[in-house]
Each structure stands twice: as C-alpha cells, then as structure tokens.
Amino acid sequence: MKADMVVRGAWIVSPPNRLRGDLLVAGGRVAGIVAPGTGEGATVVEADGLYLLPGAVDAHVHLQDPGLTHQEDFTTGTGAAAVGGVTTVIEHHRSIPFVLNADILRDKAAYLASRGLVDYALFGGVEPDNLDQLRPMWEAGASAFKLFTCRVHGVSPIYPAQMLDAFRELASFDAPVLVHAEDDTILTANADRLRAAGRKDFGVIPAWRTREAEQVAVGTTALLARLTGCRVVIAHASHPAICDLVNRERALGAKIWVESCPQYFYLTEEEVSRRGPWCKFTPPARDRAAADAMWQRLEQGDIDMICADHAPSTREEKSKGLQDIWEAPFGLPGVETVYPLMLTAVNEGRLSLERLVAARSQIPAQVYGLWPRKGGLHIGADADLVLVDMEAEKTLTDEDIVAKVGWTPYSGRRVKGLPVKTFVRGRLVAENGRPVAEAGWGQFLPGPGARQ
Image (cartoon, rainbow, N blue to C red; front, side, top):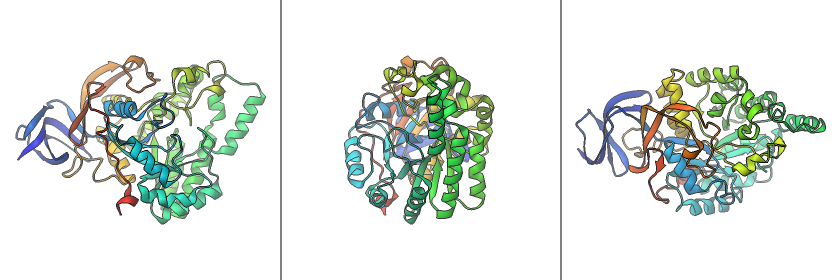
C-alpha cells in the first residue's frame, strides 16, 4: 500500500517486539509495518540505523500555564517535550487557578488548545474540601487525579482519613490517582527541629525530607489502595524500599503502580548537599547505593513508569536558596532530558530498550486511559513516533535547553542516545534538538469518563 508517510528501515521497538522494517502512516495513524525497503509513501523518512519508538507519554509535568508563565508556558513546555521524544503530556493541576472543579478543568483544556505542540491530557486535584467535585471533573475529561500527603507548592495535604474517603470516591468510577507521598507530620517535626537549630545550609534538604517520611506515607497509601480498590500510582519514588512496600500490597491485590524519575537514578544526596537549590526537589535524591539499586528495580518491573516531574523554577528563584535553603522553591526542569539520560543507561547495559519504552510509553498510556490510541506502534494507534540515534552523543548544556528557564541540573553530563525526530499524529514536531511545529497542533485527550 502507498501511505501518506513511510519511515523506512528503522529498528521498530514496541514492547515486547523489536524488528527491522518500514512503518506506514495514513491519516495520522499507524497503518502497517512491512519488510524493510518495501513500504511506499508520499513522504519518505529514511531511518536506516535508527530506532523507531512510540512517543513517550509523560504523566508528570507541571507546565505552569496559566499563572506561572515566567517559569514555563504551554508552548515552550510542549516544545521541550517534543525535543525530548514526548508526544503526550498529562499536565498537572497546579497552575493558577488550581484545577479543583469541572469548570476550571474545561476552561484550562480550552485555554491550552491553541498553545501546545504535542497532545495533552489533564489531572484534576484532590483537596480536603472538593471530594464532591471529583466525579464531575472525571466526566468533564480529567484523565486522572493528584493528591499530596504533605504541604508543598501551596497545595493542601490529604491526611489518612481524607485519603480513605477520596480513594473510595475515586474507586466508585475507577479513576486513577497519583499520590505525592511524604508524611506531613514527620516533615513538620523535622522542619521545626532544623529551624530551631538555626539550620539554613544545603544539608537541610535530606535531613528534612527523610526516607522515613516517604516510607510512612507510601505504606499508608498502598494499604488504603488495597482496602478501597482504588487505582493508585506512587509519584517519584526515590528509593528501592518504596518498591518493597508497594510489592507487599500488590501481592495482596492492590492495584498500584510506581513512578520514578531520572533524578533518583542520576543525582545523589551528596550532590543535593553540595549544590543546594539547584538540586532541591522532593522527595530528594538518596545515597549512591540507593540510586544504583534503582536500575535493577526498573529493569525487573518494580518501577512501572519513568516520568520527568518537570517542575521548573527560574535561576533567580532558585538562587534565593544560596544563603538560606528554605527560600528556594522545589522542583527541576527535565521533560527534554529524560530520554537522553535513560538511553545512555541503555547504551551502558543498565537497562533494556524494551523495558525503557514500556516505562515511558506503554504503561503510562494503559494506566491513564490513553491506550490503545497512545503508547504503542500497533495498527490504528496514533502515529506518535520518535526516531532515536543510539550512537549520537553530546554534552548537556544550559544553552541547549528548550524549556523557558534555560538550565538543567545535568549540565556538563555526557549522554549517548538522542531523539532526532519526533512526530505527533504523523506531523514532524521536533528535529535535532529544536521544536519545528507551530503551537496549536497538540490536541486535548479527554479521559475515559468523558468518552463513556
């Protein structure tokens, strides 16, 4: 058949399969895979020696639009995503206003419609006083919900009794919820003790946001997930012990998944204590032994998905923490560097390419209700494609960063394995490290509740 486009001669990776062939695109969707050199198309993309992956579904981005656009806006953020091989983002609720009811969700979806380069879905927020708004947000198109067990970014914490009620409500219509799990009472006690001692140094971060605080919150969350039947994702797991807590409840029937991020594999507690505000995120990075052990947990499936937790702040905002670490905001830019970092690990033999693709594309799409349209290269799926050159190398620099803040905690790090072309529904949106599409190509993807 003659298609609209043929990607010719690539190694096509769509877990569990890897084969060399030509991928055909028609009407913005995957139309077939044929033997190398046999595909015909109006447009031919020569890909000999390259790997063709399904576009990443990044389910943890804060693109700060509307309300915090000095840090990021939807156009710059989705441009950075496209450069990083991300073709779908699930935008979090922490813009201004917070997405806490159906009207705000609908308004945000409409506001973003002319601004994105990649497709997008939306989270709704869970706070103590909006449980009656969860079903309306689901029916208005939310793909999932987000709650925090601690106070961070101005979001109200959810305590266990409130979590129990929220999980019961979400389970009643089978909506997934992503949980930022750090115990608020432990964090508060730690902060009070550190402030009383006059501590302002960079070592405050690991002493405040301790592993114990994360483990207590994850243990409670996982137990309540099992008791209620709610579908739960643990956000940004920082340590293998988190996987152990989750696996215990999984074995007893909990519907629970683990998300982690490159910072928990590549950054360490020592770097946090040395670099301070530039490595201030939470939960923080742990020690080198924990970071090294995370690779095995990812490869064996204890960690289900890899996302960015893209939460940028400006240099000026971060610099406030140089004299007093309490003053620096949490968060890192990162949506464009996930694949270069993780593909480097594939080249180093730490991780299989198939496992990485499952964690970046297939599993997030399945958990968040976007499969089978997103997350794979099967016939009928959207032609969201990433061509990767596994031999390409570069040094990450602040100057190359597309995100608006223009810096990365990985500046100076050498990487091998780069996205070189990204397509969304068959259209080229990024090439060789730069966005090339116009804002507005990205489409809103209503969640399952709006499609029923």
